[in-house]
Image 1 (cartoon, rainbow, N blue to C red):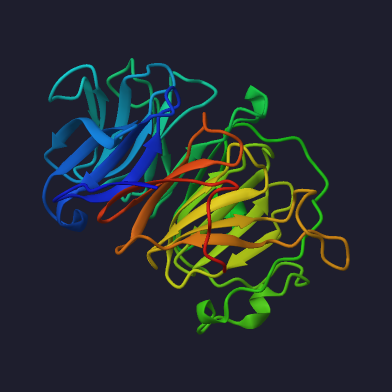
Image 2: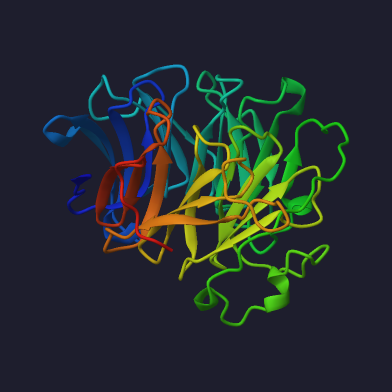
Length: 363
């Protein structure tokens, strides 16, 4: 395991380059993002450890980032002053382009994996904006009417007519209210519900235990702030959602009555989740409880089966090396099967490998 300290800056997001498995970008802020400057780090993985290849300072905090899908040296950041900035790591000091239409902090940015000349941003001003790096103004504004923490385009599995943009904003967690369809999908039969492992009793607190009964048709799930989501890379209709209630829920858009699985175990709010690009059933989570956890949703044939023949959704292991909140996680797209991952916390950035040689703490 390798470690790098972002001295004087607290990490908010970390992403592997889609072009190089040895390059990582980290978005950071001073004073926990409350006040102060931001810094974009470009880190390189070398035989001697993690080194800072370059960094860019900004006048306000940085909360998220996204690598360009068309240019190996360009990286997009979300800033607390309501701007979205594009940096070229081949140049020095200043961004090559900046857009400022949001009225409050920009919390998330995402580059389109299908139409690679567009990207999107979401803000606490209650809007999502779609942009092109070739235009000075946004292409489209989508109102959400509340603080919006996470937004992303669907992965490139569906045809263009089924491209979707998904956003999550508190306090509504029901997928019928949070899915913005650019084009309506074809009708499908509702998917079968899988059995989920009961959440850790420490995470239940004041919640109704009946809410976690997988046999409940719709599930009276209490509304909570949803802070993060991610599309499954192999099943285009499956999305995972997590937030303040410390639970990860997986939904199939063809059956929006309720979640397929509920994964519980974190002791505090979940800040980021990411499906594996190598394993269709595996996802990674980062939480305010200072841990990262690896999960399976039970859909893979190799997952141990319950008595009724249905795969068990459960925690596979955890990593607890951070001493502050963990805000960012990412998988290496170019890593070997099993998974190369990076985790970003308030005190720095940690690189690790998941595989036969990695020993995870048990749930």
